[in-house]
Image (tube, rainbow, N blue to C red; front, side, top):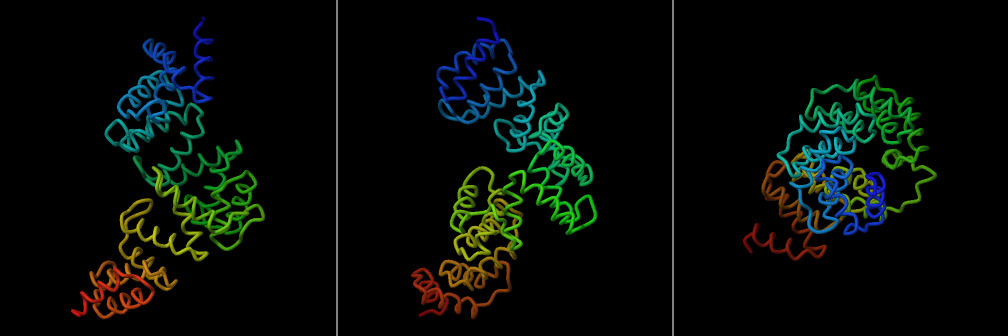
Length: 315
């Protein structure tokens, strides 16, 4: 069989998750440095689809494929360098790969290039250049890029602030099916007609994302759930601020989330708040306020808080 027919057969097997049938074909072609076969072989080893994930092997496949300018592998090399997956973390190299993929017309790589420019991750911060990339992508009906333009107008990133323009772009993104735009409208209290998610639905999405490898994607969902009274979402936001998982580490913000949860009568948040007052974690230390919140948490049923209260009082 000719190469095209052989790899087409392997790709069809890959797409229906018949990895054991696809693997021998990809491996055979990869030995000849076939860039497409190397990409798919890299994806299988990256995800552990036919065994355990093998970061080093996955990166080697992507690297060899990217040398032939296989656009999907350029993007994946960027991901590997950004995450330190199979290679030492290097944000500058991640940006270079994203920019190379973007130049080849890959929308995923273009989004990552813009995000790096917007945040200054691995490259000098340039919000205006990031915005220009988003504008180009929006012309191709890219929902996420359209959403980012709306947020740029809302936050004044690379352009003058304009609530009217922000609203217009966010509406365009919503029409394109952007979940981020849907979340943004809900955060500002303007739930769209197409948003039929319950608070529980949103909180569940947030929990799943927070437990995954992209915890920063969870934050808007948790913020929505928290604003709608979900105490567990508030606790996860407190954890995110404490540890820097998904957001910038900020002890004061963690204290604020604990206080927010405590005012919702959540025993776990009351306990956390008491501990923060006792330790002076994100707030000035106060044994009196610590005891106050331990007492309230204990009255709400927290055995741990009752123990903390006895310890701080001495009886």
